[in-house]
Image (cartoon, rainbow, N blue to C red; front, side):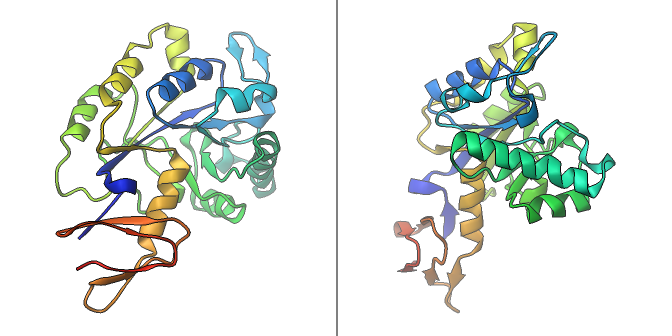
Length: 267
């Protein structure tokens, strides 16, 4: 047997974009129009700010711009967390969560590290403040899910071999279990250059594939966490799902869904 994604999908694709500049409008709509989901990491202290050529999404338009996507933390003022005091780091994360939750009306439990900088103390602080995962900027060029979601290394930045990796993901090797392709960047990188071709080509290539689960960062975290909570009988043929979401298993006999708090036979 092997764990698979919801409805038996073999692999997952997710996006993570930082800073919340005005070019997010176009990117969020591009993903949405192709049936994909992204996670947008925002600095609540910069909402609505206009500074030179930097124009940030306003608080009043967040629900519309990011409809169908996930809104997550990036620090109130995009400060470099390892170089400030513990109290300042707490406020940078906690106040960002509070502000974004007030705007969205939902839980905000995801994060990406400003400048990609973090250390063990920052990971522990973020986790203690209710953050469930946080993305780094260390490209792995592979599709393994993270061992530690508080140091979630993405597959690649969109300028780091994206289309070649897309082909590898489409024809993914069989040894991968619960593979994830995780693309990250900043929408202003497209906006300032005026060249959106690489991300447009990528989403066109990846859209509408029956074996891909198009999910937000939080949805992938929630599902893989649930998978890791599964309990088995001594012979491995009975599984109990203690999690709050369904978990799917592919067996020789077919696809099995274990609903929350349900025990299922795998053979």
